[in-house]
Image (cartoon, rainbow over all chains, first blue to last red; front, side, top):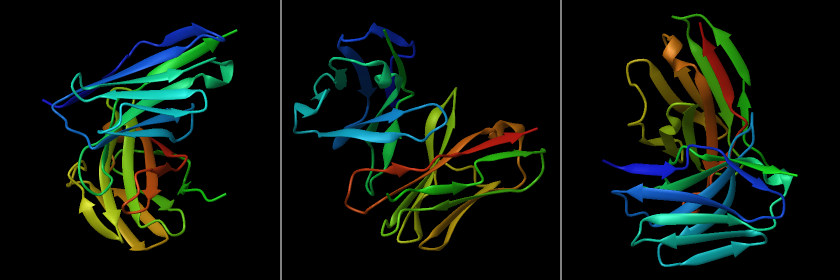
Length: 112
Length: 113
């Protein structure tokens, strides 16, 4: 069966450290993968996209890697801040027409 | 600052009642998505449209749910009759065909008693 798995347990880290979130998938061959941020009571907000032929993508303090052999993406936030506290969702392109399938998300809490 | 808008933001209703949720996509976006989010299932795609035509509604319970786009500026999601298991947050998102990013609205929190 098809699955997208993210750490269901919350990730607590100290301010200034690097947060690393994992997205594993099975039985998909996505053309690209995206990461979204969701704050309580709000809709998800797009952060980064990485394509199947790309290994790594960066944007400011964010870095995403994509290993199609391992079927895994890692999402890193360097020099984390309390304002980075949110739920982070990975999403796979799973069909034509921009169709996405989302993981269940990982809640990140950055503590002072 | 272009945004997707959704109304109502909150809806409490009784089982058996009809519920209509509305979405205004970002002007110029021709792809519209409806999602449902629950703690147990996460964010699930219900249906999506391109140029107002339904492309995929396989995620939607057909017997009680219906989605339409009466015009390019309005998408609707109806539940009739509603059931307690429909309680969730319903999100609308829009995008551009050929583009990759989806822009989400603030959601409608539905509670069916």
